[in-house]
Length: 343
Ligand code: CP
Image 1: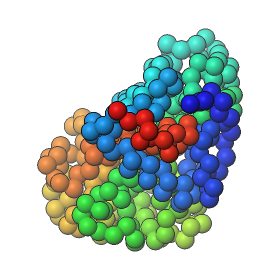
Image 2 (image 1 turned 180 degrees about the vertical axis):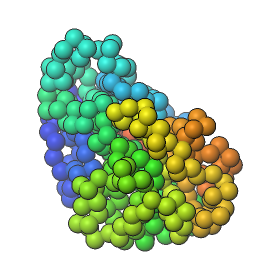
Image 3 (image 1 turned 135 degrees about the vertical axis):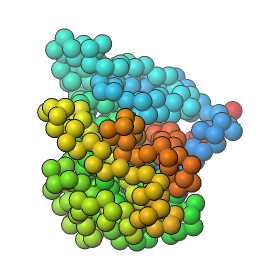
């Protein structure tokens, strides 16, 4: 492998699907063919994630896993994905333990890490920060969430989950009806997932949120551009009815100016087994990017749904490893050599 010879620059990953050496920063980069290629490679990762086989395709490669904002799933699954491909992981966790706290720029940090690692996964609290970092990077950078802006790898694992769940309940993937609810203003996962679903035909979106936390206009404009049907409501009951998928989200209290403001909306939309039985169509799939806020004042997705077979939240988190393995294999250009490096 000559991983260090990669040249990275942000470009649209379209019909030619040239992933090798590219950053993955935004859903804007991906067309349907690119998404389908990622999901196809994610499927190839099953035997390694299930520990049926092991793979050393990235033996000697290093991931710089830079998390400047709290994370459980994204950070650990990026690291696990890289380890399962045979690579090594080095991490920074939190702003205060990095030299960003001493005033170092993202550009300088990127220049330095480009000489230490082969690929970077990064989460940062400011919108646009991961792209700013990537501008100084000579190695591929994957966005693990930049403030309230985007979370493209979450959207990819979400869409992988949707297709798997529809297959599980033996429903076709055409004419998808999906309701997203909660903090649609600040929730980056719903921004990225909506934009990603827009590259597929016949998606019927319902956005359920208080007016103050409504889906941003720029995301609605993408739905409009692709001629998808959009329903906007503040009513939980209306939003739950007639859906294939309910995508619940947490009130993103860390994005609010004050705790008091977050408290206004926390607990406004609670989904529990009783509401599911009363309002949802049979077999409606329930998703949530997690973490769910289990505190009594929030509890947007009740524990009493844990035994509901259509609660897909833990399968969703599990699929994150496969999808992130696929992204590493693709941006490092080794996806066609997987079986050669099996043990
Ligand atoms: N879904 C998600 O991004 O979870 P973490 O914040 O735990 O990474």
